[in-house]
Image (cartoon, rainbow, N blue to C red; front, top):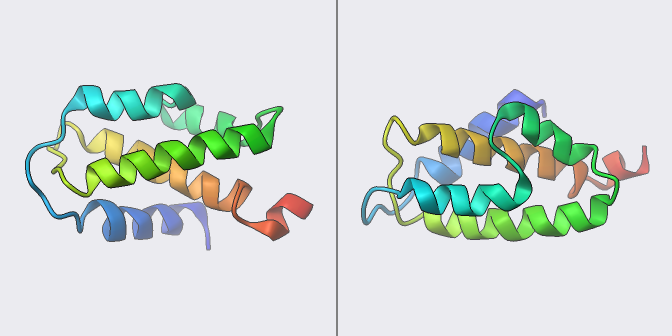
Length: 106
């Protein structure tokens, strides 16, 4: 699966299908992404080049769990969809770098 297809599937399945109870709050989204240093698509790629990949994978996993939980109860406005896309990008990189055993052996 390529990165773009993985992003699209994640965005549709996780972010778009949430049980909405209100609008997401930007500060909460930033709170979950900032420990990863993710504020742009370029920053997502830097996760894959971390010197301590196992520590990075744990940190990304924890952030993704918290983000998924938060995004399941709120709705992203058009203005906030950038955070949904950043989250989806982090998830795709995580799937390739941390969860894919074949990738880790290369």
